[in-house]
Image (tube, rainbow, N blue to C red):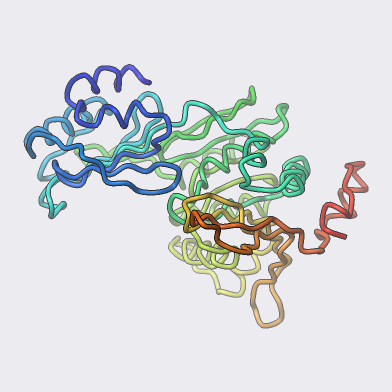
Length: 363
């Protein structure tokens, strides 16, 4: 536990101390002073915990704001920050919050997951893990796509750990969450405007700056705005092997989301030209999903082949998760299967002397 939580749980966060101390709980959500929910193994549970009053909760939120170097009041009713241990904190107070004060703490995972653990936990198959490793060695531009709480950041952390250790990696995030273990890693973080409306550093600023820093790989925590176009241009101008997460529910949806975000930029591009850029920039999409039983799985690994004559994306699935049944405990039973499609870069991999067997793809 961080020094902050160690102090806070014996004082102003004491009502939720047991949940902050519980490693099996990933998120604590306070919906007004008398309603507290937690997320455990992908599912939400209502607890009996509560603060003494709304004023007590407001005092706690202000202490947290002080700890992250921010302020929160009626003029600035939203707080978004990161604690020293990496935990994410969000708070919203009236008048923006209509049912009291909302406080959400996403705890920072101290133990970094590995590819082996994801395979053993059923999130992916051995074949998928081997293929993802091949993509990282061959520097394929990869998007990790997923919905809310699907494990995108965790998965990006694991995938980025496969980048060869002799490469220069620049990591760009809104709030630092990624834990890359390679030696040559340069993390950068966006910065909000100050009270005078100055000092803002955006994702676009950082991506443009990173291109002048001789990166081998660019890793972006989440693409959520006009910086999508800058990333696509970087991927299309020799910066291969870049990684990013994106909020979408399936691989084609990820491409459509990239379109929408890129159109937010100040560059006026015809849709056909933009789709051509996207399809030539992105090689692989890894789709993460939280299933109804709370488990997190990789449901697709898909390759982007280009656009057809009608301007539609050509997406080919290489691996899928297929649900076969639901057991008596409500758990989704299924398996990861290869789709019997060879990736377009199979011959390229063989030519580079990389070991790649057709059996990996179910052939």
